[in-house]
Image (tube, rainbow, N blue to C red; front, side, top):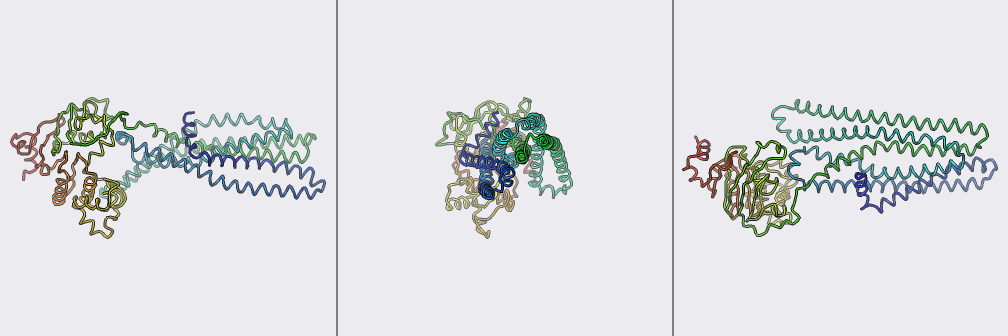
Length: 577
């Protein structure tokens, strides 16, 4: 019931249009009840008694009713669907807002294509369900009640015989519903897997081409496709069982009417006009029954999609202290106090701790480099500062304030990140730089590009700052994408800067250009640099060597070389030539 209540809530913003749609549907249902009664009078009275005037008058009345029905049906079809489309849009808006607030661990555990399937495909059938569900149920109820009352006025025993079959049909519908629900849910899940595989294959098309692994990708996709085909086939098997049986029920009811009605007519219990009207009303009675049967597939499609939508909406958002404060006037002092961390997926295994009991202090305005072998937790450490993940134990403080007592937005607003894997949004260079400050003027965007040493290159492009970068910046080189991301951070102007392997994927010449931009970016800010290329961090105020056992060494470049420890060994290995 809670699921139905949640679904009904989405009608509230559009209740006026929905009520208008229901009123029109009610008038259409009432209008349909006139035809058999008028036909009965024509057959029993107007035609045998040659009452031409009444015949034409009631024929005109029927024409007016049909014209009214045509106008009302246009309203129902158009605005009824508009209600459904708006509800679907509201649901997509809500689920997108929820996605923006979910913790990073959720995205670590769920495939992008699967999430997209929930947001797009699973809600596609909501429009039809939102429109036809209440409307068809309402019209069918009015038609069934109206037909029952009128049929009883014609012949009560015959009416009771027909309606005796209704409970049997309802029982069968409820019996099959669970089976259909499971089959349709399985179909949704397999569709999400296909979308996830497709998104992954298309994103990695350059890799699969370079490794000539198209046949392997095609085989993987065939597996997902076959599973979807089987799931879809199973849902159609259950549907076939449902529709064939309910179709037999309605046909059998029509047979009962013909035979029983014929016997009633044969024995003089009903006249010709009444029998004709009865047949017409029974046909009208069976139409809403068929309509209710036909919307069953629609109901299953819509509600299984809504169930998956609800699952996503039920995911817990990133926790925030209701009394959280804004982070203001940041100087940039950072403290790690006995910090330990492990990912949610490995919480059961205490041995898989990524960071264990780490403590360190970073002075405001200083540039600190984190170096060491892979797997030491350097990148994870950088992700803990803006609270992309929550520490398992310990505390991180900025200017003496525990970051869990600060609002996430104010915390992240004061932190700028440049990563190795640059992500550019589909759009123009201008839009991507402006992401650092969406209210920035063109002059500010150009100034940020100049500081990042990308302005001159942009001017060589035919469309300049309005050049389309392609999906994820595919039309630009690695160095160009990196400089755009640096310009983005210049525009953001944060107090704390995190550079995570920002130049490791670049050639030496490009690295030198970008290194100048990064040094300019780091001026006057607390900067944390994660680097494997030790040549890029020689000028850091302090270098901290981190391994899976914690901090091994710390000091300036010269001090660490003099210690002849881990850092000196790494440095000599990189410059052994």
